[in-house]
Image (cartoon, rainbow, N blue to C red; front, side, top):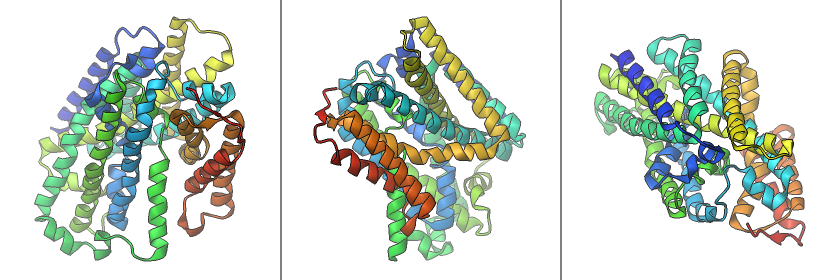
Length: 457
């Protein structure tokens, strides 16, 4: 029953993706779907993109281990989405022809900044893509008993196929479909888990009291604030989310869709985290990594297990396709195109983006299957987005004073801040290097070059 439900679902995803991606004419359609989507589509694709394995199964695992404080930390991401909706999204009207981060960075800081942000964006997206690929293999193995290699080849084969052919248009339509499945599936896990256990009162009496409250000692409070800020800053304006700000028909649609997505994430993070508490109440000796899968297997009837497993697969695939598409656009539009120094023909530009998508997807699968340590290094690059690119990118979008000098010195100080704080000082006070690096960039960026010009966009 489970296998049949999941097989039908995967075939449907492939069909929708390939169908939606037909008749792509140029790079603008491929990268930002011709700026053709409204509020609800932006809400669905943005939500489906950020709800990856870390914000679902990973959240259940962390709450199993440390309690509800991890939910509060994740709300830093929710606050980020709300702030972007309020202050950044309305300014996208100044970039009607932009399709990538580089298209915003180059007018403000020069072609070198475009290439720099393209390289960092590519590494970041490739690293997170690698993590999602590993998760796909794990899910297929855990729920269906398939060998990890076959699980990766099936799941990523489908993602690579529709993302290569249809670009952002295919990604958005499959994201919408995947979003519908996951908003049905995750509440089912929580509901049936509570029913199986006997209600919330059983959870309260079965788990440690510390799991149901926030920390009170100074050291733990500082650590929680640091983690909150890490989620607030870590993925702000990363390529997949910035591209979602560029696909709307109207700026109002972009702002509303982003705001609704941020508000939606608040109860969603609470739900995935509470599943971890239910697992803890059911089996305190359980491996924390299995918190959500355990509740699914113990609580749901076979057919609904199939639906929920499809939802879990949706969570992973919707993040994977977004980061695959963004990695390819960052490399083809922000690295290859400016380095070539000649104007691409429309057909050549589109072919380059498709070939890059295919190549990035295949290489990411190869890495995921063979060299875990390389993926660890790539994923660690997540720590360098906010300290290097976030501050100058946000300044450009907000129309603040910018200059090439500010970009160079700010980004350099951000990198040094991360390296010194994390590797030499070993994260004092449990404050993450990402927070310190971003703060260093911010201070230096706005402290030097008083002659910087206000960005005219």
